[in-house]
Amino acid sequence: MEHTLAKKIASNRKEKGWTQEELAELVGVSPQAVSKWENAQSCPDIQLLPKLAELFGISVDELLSHVPPKPATLVPEEQRKSIDAMMLKIIIDSHDGDRVRVNLPIVLVKMGLEMGMSMPQISGSNALNQIDLAKILELAEQGLIGNLVEIESADGDTVRIVVE
Image (tube, rainbow, N blue to C red; front, side):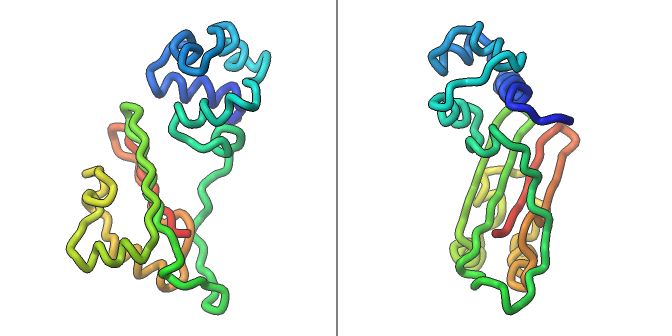
């Protein structure tokens, strides 16, 4: 599938359940402007991109480009950074339009595990009940980074866990 700005604006608007008129009002433009964006007849002013990204719950980079998740990669031991300098990212997109982005330093995740925290307590989502966070940290300590877990549930929720 081609990932043009026009298609991204349209799909993100629809995911939020907004009409073109509603998006136009939120951004401060005419409904005709939104229609032109979605039909690739024009592009939003560059100053509107941060507002659009914020409304959609994504970054400007995600809005403008299609960068697939970085695949899991085993980093040679001599090139690894300290596990305590790494980040755990939990990305949840629910079928009803909710988007959750959790970025945690791994050192905090390790402390949370030592205190008995589980994945749903960290992310706020029960969709992660079957994920063994300790195993993910173990893999990261062994040098595996990138997109470690990707789940798409039957009801359309997607969950990704990335270590960087």
